[in-house]
Image (cartoon, rainbow, N blue to C red; front, side, top):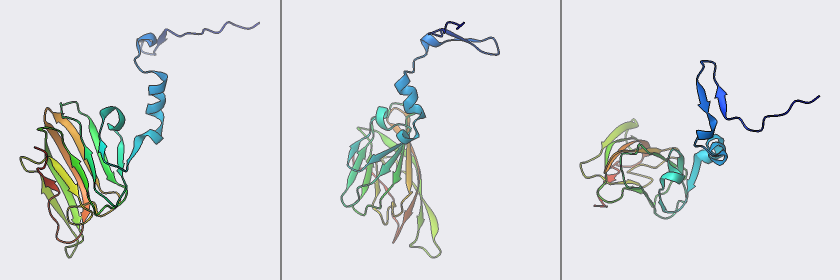
Length: 181
């Protein structure tokens, strides 16, 4: 004698007597698979890219394609909390640029380890009031080593929090500038 199999579970009873209505859960099977798929955590950006929250947020953005300048433009800061982590995957002495949109500005620091000092020393680079661009030139402004990273988080309208750790060579210089607004 076989027992009938219930084809649809509508309510899940938890041990603390809390019921969860599964019919009202918003995640689709594709969204759950994507969240569990570790291969989706890394996104290669080998060309200039407009960063999009749906595609890039919460992922490691591996910058590659050395040999010519690559510009990565952030979406407008709205206070969403979205976080973007850029990692140097190939040293590019022709520049990786990370830029904001419109009147957005960056606030925070990038720390670089300079091989131009004896001994090698860490040097902090704080943003200025109008910083809206990060330039990693593969030498003096950072990005001189695979694994260097910059993390930006949308913290308020027109405001990005920035933190990063990079390597530089030669006479180090700030990676921050104002080129957008």
